[in-house]
Image (tube, rainbow, N blue to C red; front, side, top):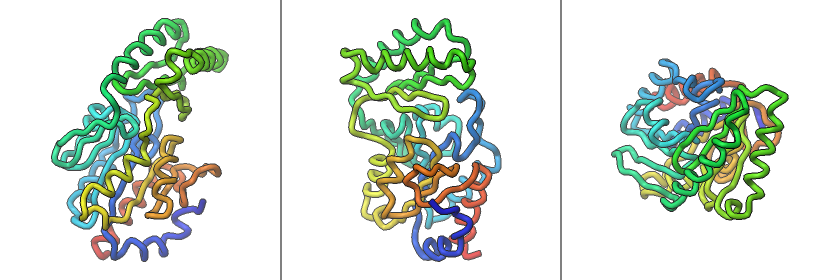
Length: 263
């Protein structure tokens, strides 16, 4: 991985005369990771930059988040852009048309798992179970160090449970376990779907920016197609470039906007 701002002139040359499709994660990318998901509110500066990007006809914009579609739409609060929720399982295009990429019966499966987990984690102080319909997130950022093992043991049991194992997969994130349908769809396939939806969009070069393990699928899928950026210097990442924090992400978005305006 290369530090993006050390190669900025080259990147400017690449994007100068090409229409762009910006694909952005939310938590840890547009806003810093907070102690709880509800505390991760988008800053007014970031919102202003996104609105300015939306007005540029040479840039398309999509948010691809692990949050539910309803939640990410509400928290970003900008209309006429594409939103992917639940790591790509739910999609709403700029016109408001919705598509679901996972069978609806998984909601029932997740509701059953939620019921099981609530009984097992109730005694662990600081743990937070987030219900996103098609997926569940078990946050343990506020759990005392001595109790983290208990959370791990619960997830290990869940993964080994035969009646559940065939239907779910468990991914590790930043102080969170993501419990998702065992279904062949992820952020990488979501990004590829966006770029192939119409003949016009096939000509747009993708710039994907994300910070977590679930973004790695997108980094791999877009590696030879555009610019991939990891927030944080993760040596194991498949992204070509990295930025240090969300502040540098906003700085880069401003630069992109300036380039496309001919500034």
